[in-house]
Length: 288
Image (cartoon, rainbow, N blue to C red):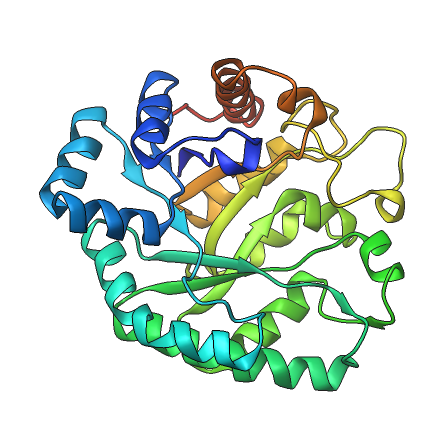
């Protein structure tokens, strides 16, 4: 596994090229990216230009969101699907087969069964399109009870529930985006990661929960850098990932007010430092 930078996850605005430079400067092995942005760069310049940019920086591509607005109205969803194969093929050619999306854990309009059918209907063609190009789809469950309490109908919000949804999609290329915060807020110990097959883990997010709040009191958009508060067991989490042989990106998604108030350079530096600390706490050698 390798430290991966998502500038958007730390509220840093950066173009693809700027993100590559920031990642290289601060010791990240990869970056999350928009496949639509990369496709535009390839059209304007070339695929070779993107490969050279990454190669010169020693940075690889991490994960990308599926370029299909599957949550929107049916017309928008259908309009995006014809472009999926081309964009997924480009991402795969450039070295990333990891696409991921999050699943809302509650809804005001659809009850559980109706919502389950909706997700199968909408995500099935997305997963099929990705599979045809050798790409995978990671589904992220959202753990905080506070999110479910704000809506009428509860939906999938645990690791086991998301594994079932992934399996029921039925394409064989759907797994998990595992976020340590959502493990904690769904009352799961990090040791459950050791029971996963590595092929079930498409992507990984790390962060920390807010001290002084119980799992059920945590707010989804208020977190800390990994290892910052010590509420989440980052050492055990990283050790579990290493034990199953996970070799993909590890990305910080902290939703941290403190980080947002920093300059972009300092925010990226603090994020990189938190990953080095995470590797050290787990007794693992930091890549690079």
